[in-house]
Amino acid sequence: MSEELMNTKEAAEYLGIHEKQVYGLIKEKKIPATRITGKWIFPKKLIDDWIKESATKGIEQARQKGKHIEGALLAAGSNDPILDILHTHMRKMYPEFYIFSANTGSTEGLKALDKGYTDIAWSHLLDPKTGEYNIPFIPSYLPNINPVVVNLFHRELGFVVAPGNPHDIRTFADLAKGGVKYINRQEGAGTRLLLDHHLQQLEIEGTKIAGYENEVFTHFEVGLSILSREADVGIATSSIAKLLGLGFVPITRESFDMIMDKSVFFGKGVQALLEILNSDKFKTRVAGLGSYDFHKSGRILYTIN
Image (cartoon, rainbow, N blue to C red; front, side, top):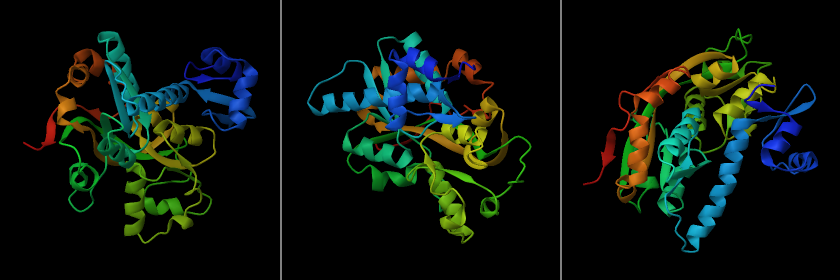
């Protein structure tokens, strides 16, 4: 089986538990899994995300009790495959630092940052009126911190479809075609807000799109839904389509940013992260993943003096 996918036995070994416990977690819907040709499949990436998310909850509880975890950075918000590679390079080059990241969606990431639940928010929220990303939302979402917005990269977002695009999906209007099943992102995700904006412009109700109510939390889950034929189309990055051998129809190039309080920005952990992000070794590692643009990587886009 692919190194990216595990069966129940492999998942049990990976987690260090009995195979029966894996089935129990599936039944209770506590573990990310998908059924393909009658068998349960576990994407290794999603299992890793699940482990990190569980760890993050414990860390947040500890912080709320006044405990400090040396070298730990908590992050929440949007999702991208590159973040996992960034975490790996961080552990290799700076083992004294940890990043725990939860896939909550851009909006919830910003809210968590303002409440002090996280150190960093990953975000790609588009303001249709200005065409700007993230910065227009700072006054409403981050009134209680001194924010710094730093660009991580620009990425290509589009419709992920089956190879050959059998339903000929080209525009947002095509999502309402008969016989087309859509897989959606959760409410508050930047991708979901982009979809809803375009549907509103076209005066198309979400109820007119089959599968609009079916939500997942990551780009990888969108791709897996297409791969398993649970859905015909979803919105995700070009890297997901490339990794899974799926079709891709470009929609836009968007700014994926890191937002934090100024005090966190000057910390050693964030500075180490930015150093890795701009290293030739990291850029070479991710070069084959898709249409990523690092020309503004590490640039401060917004701060209050």
